[in-house]
Length: 108
Image (cartoon, rainbow, N blue to C red; front, side):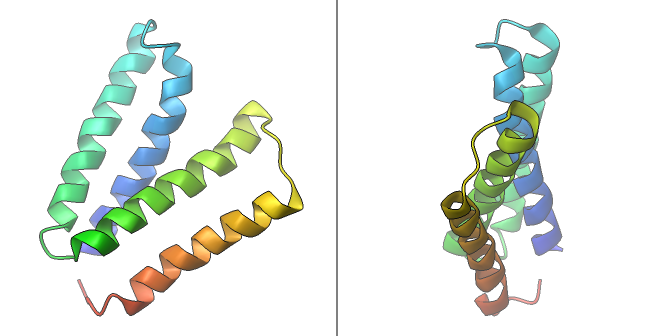
């Protein structure tokens, strides 16, 4: 269950990271509220997952999901540049996230 919570927390991190763009410096009310809710919920879920998972693993996976998701959505939603090297490094990040899960030794 902790891994499911951690993955949801990471996806919410993607949501709030992308949401920051839509808040326009927290000057738009609805995107600001949604972004704030995503931040709080993401942190609460991370904290809950970290009760049973090693904090280093939980935090690295949470950040990795957030960074990978934000980078991919940046390309898709905001036409950010993509290059073969960027794809390579994002792929390495994905492999690192999977590797942390596979080697965590936790069955939660």
